[in-house]
Every structure is written in structure tokens, then in C-alpha cells.
Length: 216
Image 1 (cartoon, one colour):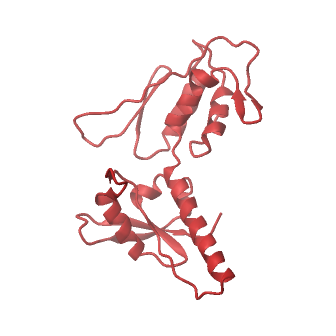
Image 2: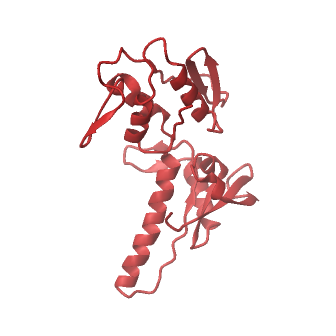
Image 3: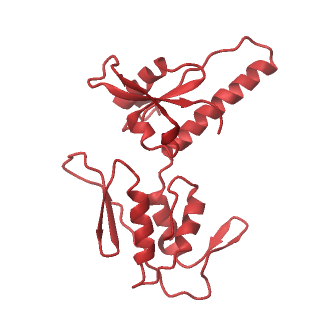
């Protein structure tokens, strides 16, 4: 069975989707691949109705936002599998609508945040060494959740507060991430659980994980 990596770049995920043949009436293989990939995402409930795949959160809220797409394509016209011409991807269903499916399926926010923090720590250390300054220690905490963004661009909310508390638990050679963040990371298996911790102005204890700050 074809497999999908939901953490890879969206163009690569699009190509993988395009390369699973799914003309109308023949969507089972791509539906299997999508359902199997989504089943690895711990905060989603995944259901099947034939070749339709439904993935939902379960936060008990009164209203939902629905993102809907389709996995089938028109008949092939000498355009399967996918091909590339420099930065452009061609192939059966690439525009309608497997590229859109890839955008909805991609789960990379935490991976991108971890990469950004690691690059910041590395580049800052390189800069400090280059100008022969005393090392300045950077602590980093990572949480995942909803935020409020003001018109000024300032970010507020409990997610911001908890991220700030987490950095206080981090050393200079690691990153401390909440369970909500680490569950969304492709490298979650490499994280070290360091216990449930209580933080100021946070009602419930937070599962905390230590992640290496070294670049992979």
C-alpha cells in the first residue's frame, strides 16, 4: 500500500498524492493511504465511509469549521505519474485537487517551529563566536494551541503564557515542549518525557518533554 508522510514539504506531498492513481470510481488506494496517515495524528478521530475519509477533532465545541476536498480525478490523459519542470509540478489531479488536499493534510507547524529554534540557537552561537563575545544563553519552550492576534501583530492568550513558562524549564542545550506540541512533531519518539509540571497561572499540570537543540 502507498504511504504518505504528512510532515514533508507540501510539493512533495502533492506529488505523492498525484502518484497514487485515483480516477473516479478507483479511489480506494488513495483513501487507504490518507486514512492510514491521518490515523497516526493523535488528536484526530478518523472515520471511513467507503472511500470517503473524515478526520475530526473532539474538543466539545458547539460549532466546527469544515475543510472538504475530493480524492478522485478525471480520466488520465498521458499525465500519470507526476512530472516536474523546474519548480512546476504536473500530473493527473495536481490542480484539481490533490495540491489542495496536500495543503489540508500537511502537519508541519511544530516541525517548522523546532527547526526555526534550532537554527536560531546555532546561528546566534556562530555569530557570538565570530565577534568574540561571551556566550549568551538562549532558553526555548514550545507549546501548540490557539492564540489571539491583535491588529498591532502582538500575540496573546494562554498558549503564549504556557510557552513562556516552558522556556523557564529548559536548559541551554535543549528545548522543552508540551505534550500538545510534541504529539504533533514527526520526531516525537526521540523526545524525553520529563514529567508533569505545574506552572504559574496554568490550571492543570502539563506533560513536558525535552528535545535536543542540535540540528538533525
